[in-house]
Image (tube, rainbow, N blue to C red; front, side, top):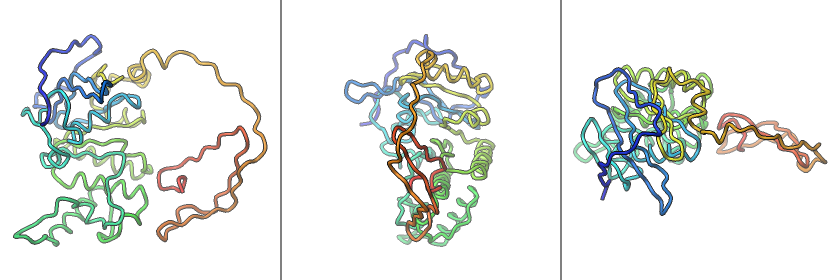
Length: 322
């Protein structure tokens, strides 16, 4: 079965605010008194969360705060929990992610759900082929696929295998896949993690376009500049509980950090003593790596010494994981 209803009032003494934008519209989606346990461990105990038409609602919190659990409930990946989910004011109980998607809730997870060995167009329509009288409507499928890719700024050969695309391009294909249907709620989990500045700007423009169409966006990111730029409202989770829901314009970076970490992250700590590095234990000279016939790293040289931490920086797909 799906969710169990729980209409008991929940004390709000831990909530700093529960303000909504000046918008009388019914929430696109609303979660009430949601509680999810795994054994004896409660990973989410959130009294309320909603998304209004035409807003970006940022969901903030440390790793392990309950953000992933909450969006999995919204998107139908978790169907067994206590609480009530409402879509457009109507109580619903998702049976699967496909069920949620069919009702207009699109989730773009940080982990890509594309099938690398399949083409771009087949990935866009995975599990949802347009069929008429038992035949796949190939022409309509390809026209709609091109339009979905155009919205995210991509012009790709539809028959190109996904595994041959750079990671950043795969991320945008994932976005196009989620937006192909007329979604009323779009959940984006760290969507710019693999994008460069230009690609991120295209995504931000797309978010503004979705807002203008009345779509509600749930946005998760650890980047403060993105929160300041996009958030109409911010909900902060800590240890699975909602501690605040406030207008984005009223929450500065310092306050947001305090809400996320509480007192535990504000105590001064002593720096660990530094020791000089020792002899070289690993050396790489002129390394070039190819994958699926494509060069993913070129002429890389580095060395690592005893007692030393060497960081490799770069966007996903830039070669740092090769």
